[in-house]
Image (cartoon, one colour):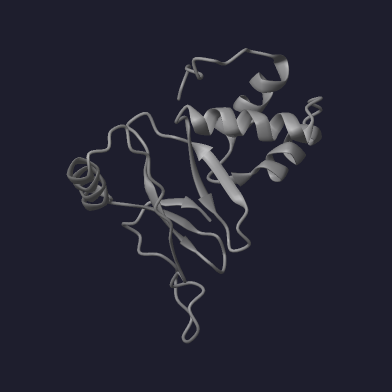
Length: 150
């Protein structure tokens, strides 16, 4: 996503501000949280503009989207090497990128077998991280796991 925007993108100062704030963020963020950060920084951007911009970015494949425990959509810039799947803690929102090669192969196989092309998919994996699991306190996720959002 770095330096690129969707094909039907019409650059406006408001959209540029939304894109900049999204890129500057750390991990997944809701449209409302992103809007609040923009307002705090003095940007004159309406909440509806934030939602529209995020929908455009999603449709163009420039953001990854997960849902929190309330079903709210959370966004983050998609890495240049493609979309990822995440395991999201239902308690604290911690999001870890997971190896999803098997999922991608399964989607490609199902699409091929049924005769579909240009298939998009959404896979949501949720659970409870070690840090939120009831029982003895834990130090959190294993150090070798990339923490995307905490």
